[in-house]
Image 1 (cartoon, helix red, strand yellow):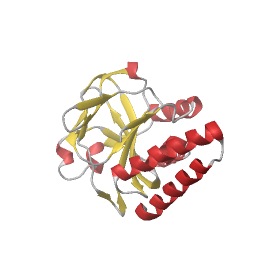
Image 2 (cartoon, helix red, strand yellow):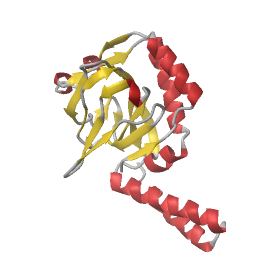
Image 3 (cartoon, helix red, strand yellow):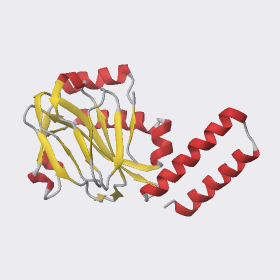
Length: 217
């Protein structure tokens, strides 16, 4: 399941992050790439104490968002990186590593930190079975997608693209199972909003909880 989350970061949070990144030190992005991804990765990563502080801010913003919680079922958000793409930079077609340290990568996310009008090119392209989807979202918005997909970042042709990327080990490993739980929870919340705590709400809550017990790792 691929979905967008608008306004993950508040205006104040986004402004503070952009101000820090404007004068921060970046290093070659190949330092955090796998052995074959080094050949297609052309970007820069934030280093130093600024990176730790900003990672914590962005991770906190994501994990408090109800849509992220309901759709991803995060067990651990990990390996978050802040990346910069200047003109001519790109990240060629690749798939994310299945394991990053001791954590599994079930779900990937990109939080956009630059306004779309501030750079040309640089779309995130996610491949499906018979098509491609292209994403270039507003600053402060996020795109969330299965880590099992092939994807790339097209060449930035002008300006600077700033993003935060990261990964999640979910309580629910399987993408289809996460989608079933999300759909059930969406219907459950809608029923509660319309009629309160009914018999139907209770039965849906029971099914949702028991599926979580069955599938959670």
